[in-house]
Amino acid sequence: MITRHVALVIALALPACGARTELTASAVPDARVAFDVVDAPDGRDVVDAADAPDVIDARDVFDAPATVDAPVIVDTPPAVDGSARCGDRVTDPGEQCDYGASNGRRLSLTLSQPGRPQVAIRPVVTRASVGQFYDYRSASAHTGYELPSTATLMLHVNTVDNQLSLVMVMGRDGNLGLSPAQPEADVEVLFTGLPQGSVRVVSDDDGELEFTSPTAARGRWRFDDNSDGCAIGSLTWSSSWRIVIEPTYRSGITAARFIDGAGTVRTLSLRESVVIEHRAGDRTCLDDCTLSRCGDGVVDADERCDDGNVQSGDGCAADCARIE
Ligand SMILES: [Ca+2]
Ligand SMILES: [Ca+2]
Ligand SMILES: [Ca+2]
Ligand SMILES: [Ca+2]
Image (cartoon, rainbow, N blue to C red; front, side, top):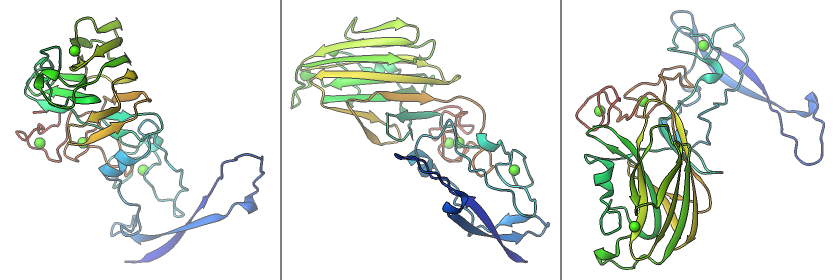
C-alpha cells in the first residue's frame, strides 16, 4: 500500500464590508489542506478515512443553518491524478449517486423561525383522530399539553389512517380546577400556505377559526379561565408545502412552544412567525454520495418516519412509509 501526500489549494474569498477594499491575489492567503490518498487494491485512489471529513450525522443536519433547499457544495478542484470525486455529477465507482450541487438531505418535516436554524420535527402520534386528540369540551382543548399563558403548536398523526394535522392550543380549561388560572387573553393568528385539501376539524370555539381561502385561515380567539385554539386536518403527505403561522398575542399569552413528537419541547419566539414545512419527493443523494434510505434514522422527503431500522410493528413500518 502506497501513501502519497496531495495538497489542495482553497482560495478564501472574504466578503466586502463597509469601506470598499480591493483584494488582490497576493493579499489572499492560501489555505493548504492536506489529505492522505491511499492506493486502493483495485488501483483507485480513496481518501484515507482518518483524514476524510466526518460524515454528517442527523444531529449536525438539524443544528445546521437552513441549507436544505440549497446545499452549499464547495467546488473543490479535481484530484491531481484526474480521479473522480463526490460532487462532480458523475456516479463514480464507490458512489451510489452524485447529483453535484443538488446533493444533500431533504427532510420530511421541519420547523423554523426567522433567524433561527431549521430543525427536523416529528408529529405527536396517537391512535385517535385529531378531533378525539383535541377533545373539545367545556369550551376547551384537552390534549394534555395545555398550559396557562402559553401557546402550544404541534403536528399530530393518527396511527389508524396516518392523517396529519396541525394543532394549536392556548391556555387551560378552568374547569379542571388547576392553578394558576388562564388570565384574560386576546390572540389573532394567520395561517397561510396550507396545502390544498386542508380542513378545519376544530374551531375552538365556533366561528373563531375561518378559512379565508383554500390555503389560508384566520383565528381570532378571546378566552378567560379556559383554553382556545384549533385543529387543521388532512395535511397531505404526497406533495410539498410550507405553512406560515403569524400570531399576534395581544394579551394573556406570554410564552410559545412547539411540542416535538420525538420528545423535545422547542421554545418559540412570541414575536416571530413560525414556518412548518413538508418536503415530499424521492430518495435523495447525500453529501457523501450515498442515497438516503429507510433505516438511516433521518426522516427523509420520501418517508413518514424512520426509526433507524427496517422492521414493522415498532412504531414505524419497515418501508418508512407508515407511522404505526
Ligand atoms: Ca462523483
Ligand atoms: Ca374556547
Ligand atoms: Ca431515512
Ligand atoms: Ca421500524
